Length: 378
Image (cartoon, rainbow, N blue to C red; front, side):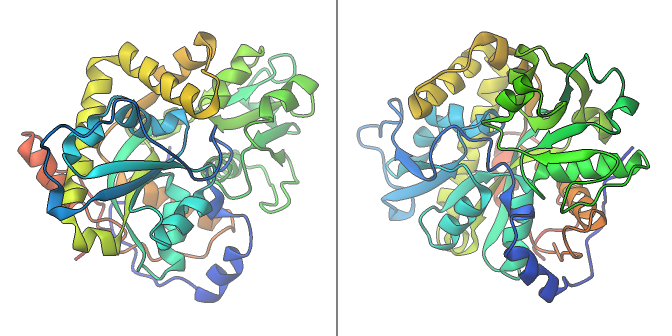
């Protein structure tokens, strides 16, 4: 069982190693294959209309929001589709951009092409450390879970049978790749992290083609996020392990909300409005699961031209928890796993979180604050 960290990291990162890593498609490339749209496709939701007479927050005309067209970004999908985020922003118009890769979204944040984004933990870690803690803050959580090890039941009968098999992960060093490498290590098996060769063959495969790779027999299974996991099940695969079962309380961060530090400093009320919209969207999802699922699928159809079939979206949606807590301790543990795998030098994550705006939103809703695991701004 993994033990999440509850104290801040005190060691500074090894700058040389981080610079070398920046040239490789490692930790920053998390979830790059999870999307269903093109990199940075701007769009407007049909329901995201500005109400007549609505006032701009802090006089700001527009806030630019990024997310992946992916079910683990369901808060953004539903908040966009249902117009919940726009309602909280009043006369400040929300515009949206979709990304297929973490680095693209981090680059957009750095270049001010977006102000706020939904993103996975690994690119947030890498983006923060590469900028020496100057470009972003994690300001809230969004989702937990939704990652599974799915295998060919004719070839893999038990967890021990995974040894010697070909298992796909989305990318070298992405969130799921790190999790699988850590699981393999805990099993006592040896795998070279970068080549993927060893007691298990780790085959880095774009999630878009993983189902075809499974059907062709070129892989025996995959450690992947939703909806790819449920697509494999629809093709005859079997869920051998749900990653949630490896974590205390069955929770681990899969999606965060980040903001550029400059935007947070200049427009704190706008940031609070987006967070308020996120919290209200998660409440909407909790209270209206079927309607929320349909809204997410409608947005995916708008973005990709194709909705997910019931046999895929139904189990996928159930496996994801949409939450406001960023589960900071689990992000710290995920960084540890990347270090142990040899994919990252010890990162200094002190200050990666600023949960004060979220704390205000939660307090106003009569809810308790959430913990930053000692990694918040001082």
